[in-house]
Image 1: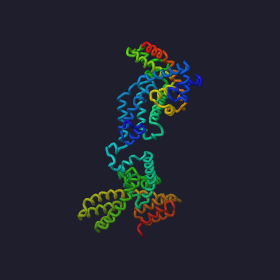
Image 2: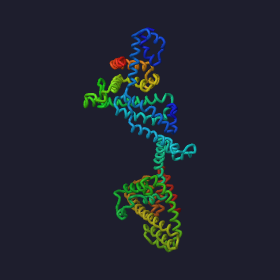
Image 3: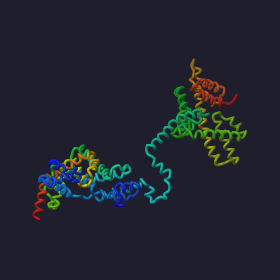
Image 4: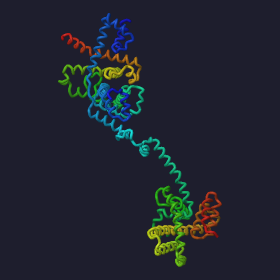
Length: 331
Length: 200
């Protein structure tokens, strides 16, 4: 080993990592230059130990320890609460809260997707219901407008009338809520129950009341019939509270039904005028279906059957038209 | 508790023992703060980085696998925090008034407001420490961090190499160069110390 190699190894010797410590020591003992280099290096290291040491601020230390405690409490709730091995199992809802955010997001996305997928189907079911126009009028905001004004108002054109009717039947099927999905559910439950009630009431109503009803104007007949029925049931001492509520709801339904009947009358009138005036006029299947339903509403069964059968011949309206045909009274 | 290794203490903390963290914190609070202080040369920034580093340790302790020593992991976090801070300062394009600049003995704010040394700084011991502090701060950054990790924190060369991401031999070379620079910079002090010893 020469002096150059020795000087290079001086540092390693101090750091106790020299490759050949004995060789370095031998040269240091003989060579004053190497010895001076060694002493200078040692002195520099000794001085470096004099580097001032400063304390971190106590408030920051306290904040760090507090954070460490808080983190522990949130990460290990069962230990933080003081429960040891006897700790109860973590409840399901807490486990759910620890589910990774991406999993929660995936579930939420799936739920939204299913919801979006189901909306058009719900609307379709509702438009296929037995009495779509009656149900539609329950929920449509238009029904809240002054009735006389609406009845007096003539549609700007027959197409507008058809469009308006279709909008009523399809866009706002039932319920009166903003969500078509949520509106669909009560409608499916409510309509059969209302029908059942109407049937039951019709059976219970007195013969004189029926005669009186027949004498009334066709548009008002259902309302009077139901009103009489409710009054008679109430006077007969039936289930008072329930029936009172039912009677009120039914009257609302009948109002809407009467509106639908008036609309149908307007629509049928426009349709017949068009048939009479326009040679070669061939209504579209959707129009045939709608007009068939209108005739049904106006108790013109033969005409209703004719147009519904035409609508049933077209694949796009076949299913709905057949349902409407089934709803017609048998000949 | 105090005879447990750093890694065992961290594991105990992860398992819910807050006392384990306190022991670990007491072991490293001073060395870490001084490393940061000498690394960035500004007490305010050092305090900020000190808090950030411990916050990261707390947040990421579950990710510590134990492949390396806790000290290596801690100083790697602190060093990365320093690098991020320097990057931000470079982006801002201006130096802090509190920061000591290269070639200057005092922070800019002291040079502007108080050109002379304070009376208490004239005390010999303090003046000596101040000279050493300045000499260390004037080391090139790569040498300074190796010097600080080795001399102040007592990390082995292998650990220092892991923290700075350089080969062990490179780390040794940087350490030797750092000592040579300090030796040159503090030569007069060494002579004074030698004369004082002779007189005594």
